[in-house]
Length: 185
Image (cartoon, rainbow, N blue to C red):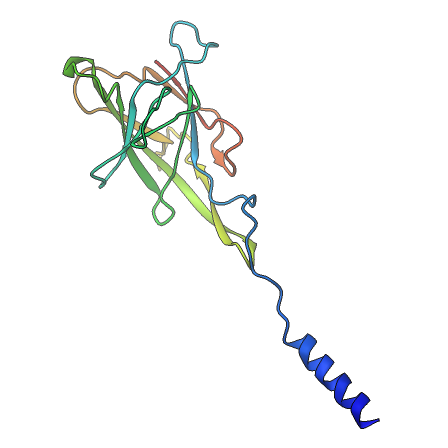
């Protein structure tokens, strides 16, 4: 009888010391990035591939080069006409510089625009294993005080804006499965 009780006690304490595995499934959605899709300005329904597009965040020294024909590790393959970039989770705006044809030997062919994105963000609980993710909402356009715009575009090099038209398609950035920004050039 004592052996049975001891065995039950060992079994009970053994089960109580087990814990669930806290492993976040790699397929669990995390903080989404802002998805851009590029189109031809003269044919708005036709996608336009980017060529040596370098994207540099404010306060960063180097950028990521998106190239539709990447052949080395310093260049990241853009999905033809689509790129994704992160937004900062601890402030309400992020500024990026977009350099078209950044690897061109002819400096006159390189064109630089900057865009500052204004947004609100919210931390959303995912699970104990995965923690939190942040979702974003681009500020809506308002024409009365307090003034608000989803982004501010600047021609930083004086060569004219290469991103001739920029439209917010989906201001709610909750996943990366859809386009948030359409750019025509």
